[in-house]
Image 1 (tube, one colour):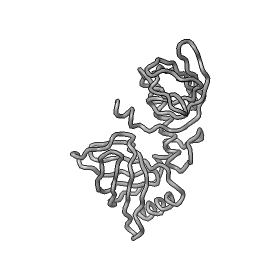
Image 2 (cartoon, one colour):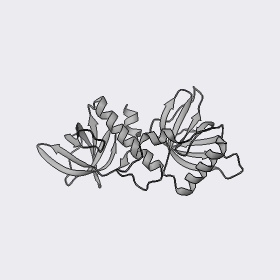
Image 3 (tube, helix red, strand yellow):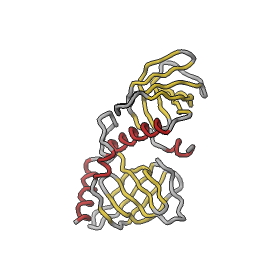
Image 4 (tube, helix red, strand yellow):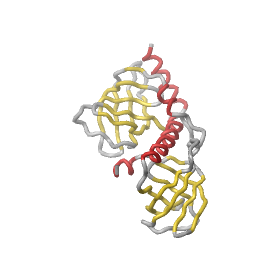
Length: 224
């Protein structure tokens, strides 16, 4: 959990949030958010390890989340707060919302906002079953050549031997995907979305229109 907490990507989003510490309450905006914590644009500095209460409405139709937290650090753009004692239901709501923002980002949004693509869009994206050569270079020491299992315009699943060391959930990776039509390889950025014993699911992020169109053309050709 500690490693997942550090590795899970935060997404920039401005939500109304209330932070209370030492009997004082501030109504501010979030700077970024993950299922494990939040950064809030605060007018004051709070000392590290200070306990705070966070009230966070999510635009998912549910009631506002009331969360306990502790101050991790103060940055120029806000105060980073780590959630403490997070309940399963609250974590699930936070993760679904953040994952939705990641899907929006993977669809080419310059910055995620509240108009996000639902996770069902990712599941509906056409996938092509194909074994293509792929190079995966993680931000850690993970760097390997492998084969794809399937591919869509949203992400790719890569086969991995059971003995391989997989990068942690949420790790950013650089991909280089060979194409079967003699075109130059496709280079893309992705995040580790799901880890399985024999495979790794990666979610594309920050795709431009040209790259997304190349992926769509490739997927369509492989599905024929």
